[in-house]
Amino acid sequence: MNLPNKITLIRVLMIPIFMIVLFSSSPNSNYIAAIIFAVAALTDALDGHIARSRNQITTFGKFIDPLADKLLVSAALISMVQLGTVPAWIVVVIIAREFTITGFRIIAASEGITIAASPLGKIKTTTQLIAIIAILIDNFPFKYINFPFHTIMLYAALFFTVLSGIDYLYRNKQVFGSGER
Image 1 (cartoon, rainbow, N blue to C red):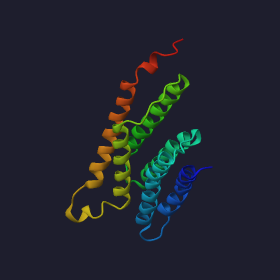
Image 2: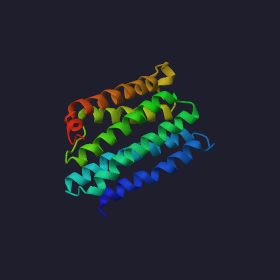
Image 3: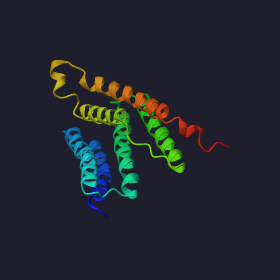
Image 4: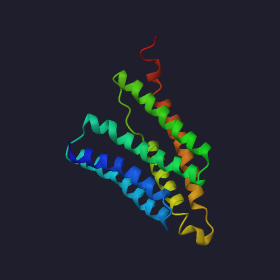
């Protein structure tokens, strides 16, 4: 197993640690969870950079990397619903988009079509990660000036989640016509 795939697996292993810390009753657990989440999120950029720069892109990596991202974001969002810091309907929309696009990519792959990540998809991921961290740190330092940065980022993440999903489907609509029954 190469280094990028090991880094990705570390990201997956950080998810239960993140959740244990988040749900612990220790003081400042949300800040510690935010740090763990941020480190896990940064490993996504790191493993991708290493894989590309060393020409170590593998089939396993192509599978596990996006799965790790979706698991990390989903675990955080579902946890925050339980904690009452994120509305459930927003999480349902975000996770539904992820299932839809993942299914769409599976269909495309079965037809020999590779759907690369789009710029909107990267913006979606970035806004989701920033929103989650801002919520975890309880909008610090913006709460002192009464600026709802975490709420703005959550709705930006929702917007880009929906927009990027529509964009993926529209730009790759030929997949729907392939292999008709």
